[in-house]
Length: 475
Ligand code: ASP
Image (cartoon, rainbow, N blue to C red; front, side, top):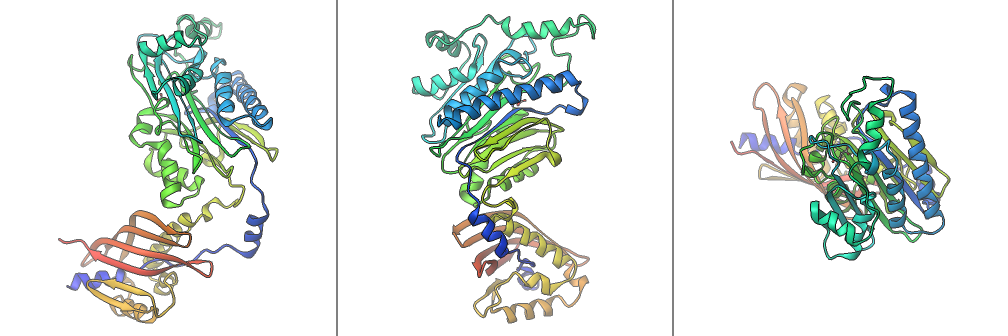
């Protein structure tokens, strides 16, 4: 019981409430979202600072040409799907990228290509894996989507399907000729292996687009990872891992260590965070890049239904770019701090509701650890109706709750250090969230921990805890 009542006191949370200033509100209301938008990538990883000028210039030029192609389709009222296919075909035909012509080779020296495409309007999708004779894998993926009842065709069957569909076929050597030419250039040893450039394999391509009809699409195409085992399939052709699009939320294309993207269902997770946790696009991506993936795993490009673009990577570089109807047009080989976010309705992407609540909780633990109970309590609803329940005891009202804390925690030593983790935010409606999580209290005597459930409600523009239920771990 002693521990339980101790827990009771700890139960609460938060401190400083962050609210939207009136000027920001005005800004948000008056700013109009772009009518179309597009973002592209040409692979994460590698360190562009170490590339020579030719390689940098080739990459930049390739990104610009592809972005122009997508832009002209969307500007002319074309569909997001057409823009995605066209952009990716353009990049597949450019040997500076690891897709189509420039695809890397397996440990046996052959190119095996993967690609996928998804239509956000219908959630129709198509993918191909391990094709060896297809010039533009993305177009074959689209044909799987439109001309079959399947989603993914692999290997021999996919190559045969390509022949039936009369898409341009090439000799397997088509994928090797460029690398052979590179390997005999005068500035290096004549017999360099085909993948002599350690950065060579970072160049998967992807595209996400929003068209003027409000539909989203996403696509990804790659040669995979260099020296992969024959038959290895990465995330690029796996819907939900490397590619995802749904008009309800966003379009996503990933690039990086495919196995990590598959394990973490990365592309779908961005959409799920938005749909179920109410996250903004950029905060969903930030969480995945920082918390689910490891440093060096890769990057994500994404576009929300409202035209917000998020480009993020946790690798030294990511070739990428974006354009939209407001006149933006830019390409990059790496992003400052690994990210670039544009939210047309709210430039401060971190002020999304879920992000605000996470910040409040983080701040609350900092206030607790600084021994500042008043700051800690400031996020609780200052009302007689506040319900605080812990250790089987229920306290009603703000005054009674802070009084209970003060009795239980008279000084910094008794307060110890707390940590709130495993936060799960569940949106209840426009103005309410439930937050589940774990708490730990470390101190010299009686360290303790357990779980909590909070209900947050937006009151006069500020998020406040209106109900707090905490329980201790049974020993
Ligand atoms: N994700 C790709 C794969 O694992 C490779 C990459 O994006 O660089 O096949």
